[in-house]
Image 1 (spheres, rainbow, N blue to C red):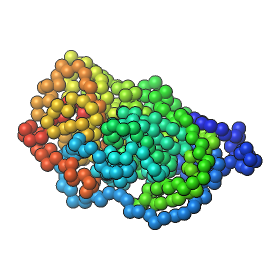
Image 2: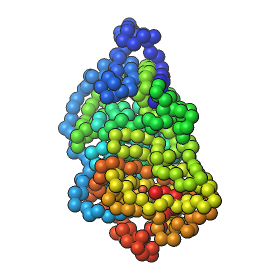
Image 3: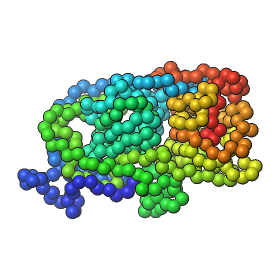
Image 4: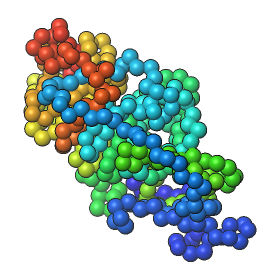
Length: 397
Ligand SMILES: [Fe+2]
């Protein structure tokens, strides 16, 4: 990220900064990777350490399936209208390992009446459907269809959505989610060959300073529980902050595709990096322009990664099986590739209007008990017998 500030801050850090009544504002350094990663300094009205009450923690988290056979997997979540009442119980983890978890979330309630923080993972919310606001101590951040919302761990937030379709893809990461290192220069600026730059990153834009006393619930996710913290002041008590660590939005529609004469490999679609996995964006683009080019991908043997594709928009909707909201999991150890007929059919095609999010993990993923209801039993046979299963868009790997 880059340096940003909102509200009022003292001219020098760790110096006296006083409220109108003469008392000091309470400074909080929020730092990642000890003192080696990015950080921000926050200026609170109240001490962020002061709590009113602690309630019993609530068990929270997915049930992992440990005996799922090695097979190509299709989870079709297209028919899901809602996945639960409120934001936290509507988050259904479908795929998980020690590095990341992949969830769907379509809550019935559009506004959270509590605050939430993930104390053990960065979160990336992909707004498949929905329009709303992320409210955090860093300010308001608009959420629009197609946005990736990157929320560093421990950022307290609540979400408010407008009425209408609401469908979120949520990726939790046990390591920091970052922009791609090879696209940054030695001082961290995104370079000319990057598919996006700082202008495409939207920071929070409107600080809320709420100093009213009251009772505020904060649910903190850590180690299989939601810990219930009660405060007698709002978490939105900041008068200002500055630094590099803040939640931000980046729209998939601002990702500028890299194309070539012949088929480009998936790393050209990379959007974010984290330890042991990457997030990529497949966006509308022109196809390969070598006169003999084959736009369909070759068969691929991913010897040390599991590949997950989430189909957001595109022509695959007219295909059998794969629908808007489908996930495919092509696990390491098996080759995958285009479905019968798609290679010849792709020749001469000039462009694609497809939109998809890919998560490639370098350690195997596990399905969860919540994923089973979406399982398409025919998918492993779909390359053998095209009538038995889906037939996906030609350009995804
Ligand atoms: Fe692949």
